[in-house]
Amino acid sequence: MPAEVNQPVITINGPLGLRSINNPLYNYTFRPQPSAVEFPPSSSVSQTHAVNRASYHFGPPFRSRILNICQLASFHSTVRYPNSAGQSQPDLANKQLQANGASLHSSTYQLITQQSNYAPFSNTGYTDARGNHYNSIENMHNAIHSLVGNGGHMAVVPYSAFDPIFWLHHANVDRLFAIWQAIYPSSFVTSQISNYGTYTNTPGKSEDINTLLTPFHSDDSGALHTSLTARSTRSFGYTYPEIVDWGVNATQLTANVKARLNALYNPSSSFGRRSTTSDRGSNRGSGGRRFPNGMNRQWFINIRMDKSAVTSSFFVHFFLGSVPVDPTGWSFAPNLVGTHSVLDATIFTAANTGPATALYGQIPLNHALLDSGIHHLGPQSVVPFLTSRLNWRLQRMDDSPLDVSEVPSLKIYVVGQRVKPRVAEDAFPEYEKLVAYRSVTRGKAGALADGDPE
Image 1 (spheres, one colour):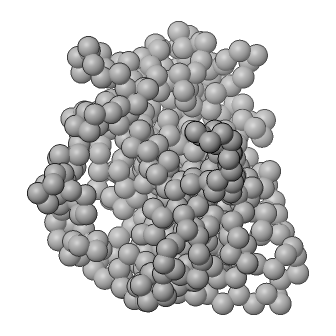
Image 2 (tube, rainbow, N blue to C red):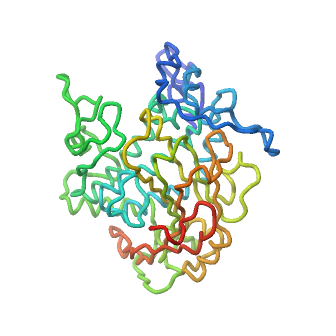
């Protein structure tokens, strides 16, 4: 997070000269103070998991059950990564974000360059035609909510918009979606059954491009926006630096946006040298630096679980090597590969009903493999390395460990693919089919079993 959103007080230069004011980007103060009945509704309270602090002998005590979300009503202002006294800890939130920076950077590029179908691109629950592509923009969206909030308002999605940083986060999600749209303009919302519904849409009903997006009005008469009316940023009179969508046709726009995306997420001075056989890759920048998104192999961790089994928000942290003894440092450990965030399903509806819905997530591995000195990314090097060193732990948002047995539907496995690096500034890499390497995780708690489908 930039310093501008983490300072409680800022100095401004106005008509009366310099003066200090409360920073409107730091938090939002409730006036009047919400009651436990009104905020949030008592029917939406997450389950509280008891923590036997006496059984742990390391680090400071775990934070109190901040994510029993009825406690949010006791806070006079929004908080981020709150301590046991309900005070924001922006430095720790930033440490979590920085520890996941390389993972999120790679995820962004891999998602946009590999997923051309709106349905699996858009959400964590879509199943059809997903294959082993478990990433989605919702997956990365959830990560920022969790890493910034971690027990505070940003981690409880229905109430997260009270935190001013919500709007900065969603502006960037909108930017990424607009970039994807410019590259794949023909793919968009299709009719799907919503198992869980929303506050205004009934569970089990079909939703499509014309479903009303309450409470967002499109005019003063009370008409509501739909996905169709909100499809383009041009309808609202804005765009983003990567999308200069005037004076060009659709083909030129797509090429231009691809070039901008490559410059941001996969820069290289060697895109003209195309290698199709070496697993070392040829994507180097100045000083011989390798770019994880430009290698001849890509490796990922796939995560799947049943949404109906999720009764509290939690993290799945992945490590290369030994897991730190103290769980309060898991989310920013030096050997952290990345963190998958799971947001509580029970805060959206009074109960989980309807057919079981899978949740999908994906964590890239290339950045961590390169940092570990594994520059030959073929299976003969990567598989034995990951088999001996890849570990994971589950953690609630009060820093306490969550045993894998409490999420019995959890399935974790490693996938990899060959890649032909891009050959032009406005071209994307060519990706082969993702292949599962079950042996990497075989026998570990929470891993995909040999008889389980991918």
